[in-house]
Amino acid sequence: MDRQIRLIALFLGVGLVVLIANVTIIQVFLAEDYRDRPGNQRVLLEEYDRERGPILVGAEPVARSVETGDVLRYQRRYPLGDAYASITGYMSLIYGTTGLERTENRVLTGQSSLFIVDRLQQLFAGRKPSGGAVTTTIDADAQEAAVEGLQGLRGAVVAIEPATGRILASAQSPSFDPNLLASHDLQQVRDYHEELTADPDEPLLNRPLVSLNPPGSTFKVITAAAALASGKFTPDSVLPGPKTYTLPGTTTELRNWNGQACGPKGKVTLRQALAISCNTAFAWLGVELGADALRRQASLMGFDSGFQIPLRAATSRFPEDPDVPQTALTAIGQFDVRATALQMAMVAAAIGNGGVTMAPYLVQEIRGPDLAILQTTEPQEFATAMSFDHARQLTDMMVQAVEQGTGGNGRIPGIAVAGKTGTAQTAPDRPSVAWFIAFAPAQAPQVAVAVAIEEAPTPEISGNGLAAPIARAVMEAVLG
Image (tube, rainbow, N blue to C red):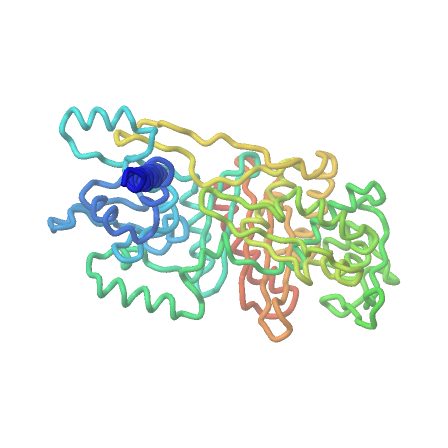
């Protein structure tokens, strides 16, 4: 009998220890994760009873809470609707939170450890906790120009301040109205969400950060950077640029976008090849450099790395193990190269920043309920992508591409613009993606822009025709 009692006691003791350990893990280590999970209805209901802090662009709220006079005391409002949806995300009773509403939830609800003093004061004063504010890095004029430029198109725009990595614009089309998902009319919310998820254009997709497309000829600036870094080539090195180039080991012929040879007798300098976007010259150059050199250069500009700004961006990728003909195609941004608009803005920004790639970020400041600054994001270097001299040489080459080459629609009167067009197909039977990347090298403030337009016409010039005018408008908005 005593032995049975001891076994029962031991069993209960072990069970108690396991229970205590489980509760401790949940309460101490996993509490924040459980609280912040989308769809946690109990937490959401608690949050609707307190005033959530604003998300700011400058001093203006692009997301704020308003009193309803209803059972749910507060409702989220987005004054500019779909213009900032890819940044703010939404707060929904049914679908939880996305965007900055999700990543900065503990700040906006006042639960962050940064607010310990405010929370103690509120506790002793008998006041309900109120949320802090999140100030973004966004430039309102740049964002407006990006949104207007994308009207009627499907695509994304990202603008970055090269010297810091501050994201000045992040816009997409199509977008969605977060107000309709924040409504307290649950049937309206369900209907609108179903409409969005059924839309083949995927308006809920955060295109600037997660839409991966082949970068096409904009990748040629990375190939050019690798060529300069090799020590074997200068901007004036002469490359073969025939009308067609047979991919090594195959019978497949690669053609130039205009169907012509590049330069007299099919010979062209590296500088001229970039300006006129010569496919055959850059395919040949990619083979000469090799896949490892291209991968190394791309990685220094952000490829194959994950970024949280704090929204999580998709990882832009360089092909894992391309053979020689695949390397030729990779050098012109084809084959399996994939990049986001954020990534290609980082590429332009790195060149514009003297060869230094900065880590991108979207949150400038965290402010308390009284709007006092509690935390400021400091710029961080990601990598040195190239030497200052090589960055300057590549900048001059990109300026020529705008002034005398394929990027003429990126010109701004009185301002030198460095840019590169691009067009690529995701599949033979799919429409093209039109690109333009650019920066203004001699201006303060600086700005680097990437524009990606999906379902574009097939000619190479579509990067100039569709994307370049949008990039120009965004740069003009920043430069004033």
